[in-house]
Image (tube, rainbow, N blue to C red; front, side):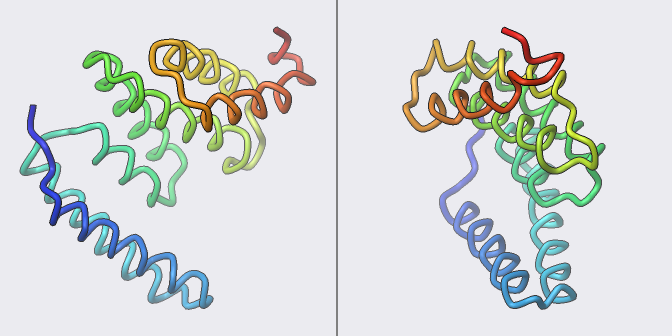
Length: 150
């Protein structure tokens, strides 16, 4: 399997930090420029390595369009699942749950519940205390809604 080089991850982290700093300073034009640079760099890595889950999920983190974010996360999850990369599945499911609960205009508890079940399955194969606690928080958020009955 192809692997992104350490210096490439450093550049991703540096660009992500630049986006974050500009947004924190309320400099949205600069934040947008850094974000575009980051997405362009991720696109170049995808050209080089193919559609690796980490590239797709990281790109999704910085996209403004929720539909595009969903597609990228779902593709990343599908690839991770095929590769039996349970920890990557946990990371991506977590992002999808948050997207469905917090980022879209109207929370979609049914879809959050669906991704929570997939997250919990992956956690059984790759236990992680932090994400297990997050899953419990999500379960309590979803449980009061029609689709969240367990």
